[in-house]
Length: 566
Ligand SMILES: [Cu+2]
Image (cartoon, rainbow, N blue to C red):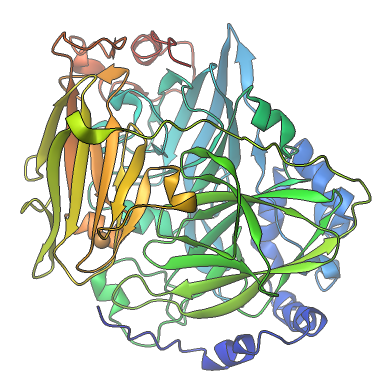
């Protein structure tokens, strides 16, 4: 891999490189940028904010002027306040909670002072946070207003393949896709983003990404902070690539052009030379970190070298809160941690190039003001029970991540069409151990749809600490390997497939993707939730031109029959 990153705005990086500079000084710097038009997409973020979101921001005491939309006040301290993505309210009736999303185009400021053409869900850039509850049935009416095909994948969610948002369920401009399913995931931080063939990088980097918080009734969830925007804070990082005119790049040709910058965004706000502020009104605050970058690696740490108490990996709680000095997230990965704030603290993001070129450097991204006066209870001594797999009788499989010229391969095939990609076939209930071998010298991020996996080995070493949690997206370094184990539960289908792929989105688009077909051979002892494939005229027919939830019985009929293991 070549690290040829050389940001055009070197002065920004120099300023940022001096990251011990006081927060106050940098806030001043941030104001200058803000005056040049930074407020636009922030107001859009705030415009749809509802419920807890508004309470949180107003409670923080600094952003009231933004809520009034008063442009003349943009130079206030509000412009350096962390933006909390809107919380999308669902409507519940007949025990189904319905969410409405529209994928659309817009403009936003990705590079400070420059307007970029962007995409977002319900807004110009990024999307609102959805809250799902374990055991509930959700229905999503998602309208495509992009002018091109898209899909919406629920990254990390355990849902039927027909509802998974893979390439087979692409839907066209002007239509609405209406997946529905029972939420089987435990408390987790998931996210949603496009997943059509060849356009995932383009659409995701332009802003089609949002967080999903799954809540459950576990003791751990009851004991942890969960007031969205108050003490439960989403941190969505993106390191993008843009030219000086604001054109966001997403493919090899774009990344090899000259004069690029690699802006780092936190919840949609450029933090290259601005440290955002967050006032913690509770002593204990929970942070949910998502690396929504197309390729770059984001490492989160404290500026003072202190520890973070990590509570969750991609797929839910660790067995116990674990002190770590940093959390390294490859593209697509998530983690949760809590901080007990008796004094102010600053979070940093370290950006490491993941692809041919990209971001680099250490950024003070969030200055947290500790204003809580409460004394939280000790964290629970146990958050979760994770039975480690005994893989001695698991079916072994090898997945090879390869390269041929500009084509990226899985098991020798470039998955740029459904027909050309390698297909992994397995059966419901099977337990497997996969060795993911990276035969390239490039960085990869291995993502498996459908079920979570345990790490059995990382470059030949046994996992320790937080590596013993549940994952769906994990780093495979150049020349390295990971061994993972999983069990294919609940869902089988003989038409619709899951995907497994590199989550460096450019690699995915260049073919590093294979399909996973889970069929029911009748031997499984787990309950099947087989999507009815006999009526498959409904495959994309669930993309109707209407956003109505009630006239789309074809979509709702297929997928919510098996709540057995929740
Ligand atoms: Cu890759």
